[in-house]
Length: 444
Image (cartoon, rainbow, N blue to C red):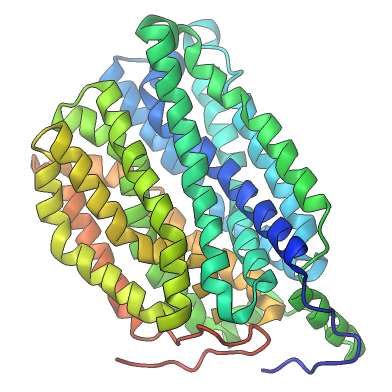
């Protein structure tokens, strides 16, 4: 479906506006992943402070709590997605970033289990659910916002900075948790030091909201909104979305299985895996992913730019096949000690970069403007809740069930196979206008 251009079509954004839009989008993503970073890297301290039982049992409870927050992400997508297609991307993104940062801040204020008993884990679960609900609208909205502001021929390059924000936020959270651990020592971290990084989420959220408040909604959305008003059309409901756009919903869902099993295994579960399964010290287990993420951040813009030249599909195919073939050897390399863990993680991260760099250029383009926010948010978050947030618990559970330390690698391989099947039906959208409905399935 092509949206007819009118004399009232918004002018393309100038360079300064484009850069502000990219910064505002990336800041929200950084805030979201800052939370994941401090939670993943502080899970041992959080477990000891807020959960009953011995530390091993408490860590399992904390990982399960991490997964619980993902169960409400589809509800967030169902709520925020249609709202973003009706009210605009900007309004929804201002609300979601405040909810996210507020929930993260409050985690750092929860009294200990010794002080309030089972209210401590209960409050943590509630706050994680609020965080998950707001994230259900944040990521889909930020990616849509980024994609609709970017020039068609450079959407991959500019979109890669959304994921630069992902890794920057995660690295900041991880780095703060590691830094405080080294500065304060284990005793102080268990007693109170783990709380400090959570308190930093509040200013991050306020900065993100300020940046977003200074930008107009995307030109593509304003143009589509004007055309819909002229034709007296309303935004499609969820039933119409499922009926008319089921193919991109399924394709995005399948690709996200691969994307987020790899993502949450590498970024969220890896510190726990390296410490509990490989035998690295706590600080070593934190340093390995931080080094890997810094390498990934360097290559993200190059992968995004390359996707503008050769297309999204070739990069996804390279990444999925590369991970499928090499994930087990690289996991075996990581088991050889600190240097092996660093090299193995860096190589896994670089194989994953072609997927990560092209998310906001690939997925929003599969939906027409009138349902773009809702379609992306719903498909992404349902798949993420089932396969992404549960990846740490499934990986740990499979090891306990089988005694095989490579089970997370095998699970990652299975997810990549699902992604390759979905990729067969994904159209190439590099360089094409977001004002069109591109979804003519391709094979091969």
